[in-house]
Image (cartoon, rainbow, N blue to C red; front, side):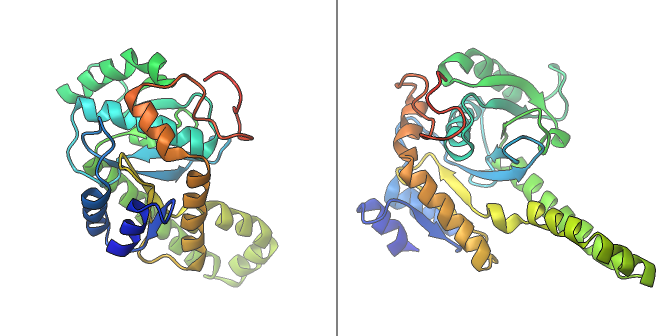
Length: 272
């Protein structure tokens, strides 16, 4: 793991992928790569299956740090918007702040202050701030980027993974319970196949460390060859897009709108 990050620091590699322990990988990455100037706390961003045309939403932080204040949420929004542009080709991502309700009076003092910051910086960050979102909005088409702290984000992520496995197990048990259920499965096998591919977490394996001087992708420790290949493909896509430089510019609010779009991607070439 140390050698992998060292190759990134020495520019022998444009991106790094690891299936190792998340905490150890973050610690090594922080020590060797350091944070982008202006970033207080790095974040881990992941894809979440959704009803959006791209098929996924972005959520961060999902476990880099359990704490976050209003300024951290602001930086997460900037980095998440940049990641959504590069990874999903969204010209102007919609940002939502995860809360216990959508009403403005709900939530902690930090969330209310963060809401003011996200609203005030929407133009500079080239994103649309839609306000507070709830857990039920994470897979919806109402938002593109969900901003939260690492404690909440990690619980939501692990809950989603566990629920998906439970539903899959229940469905398998039900479809094999009787001869009629087995016959029904045979008749709808192609539809179930398409659903399995769409919901397969291996297709979007890989959480990206945002806020470091290097592109690091954390693959799930139990990923098979398909999952690891997806993480490697993501790292290649980000490296070719020059994502690291664009992310640093976005955090510093130093570049003009539109620089984050990948040539050829949805929204590329249009004002952002």
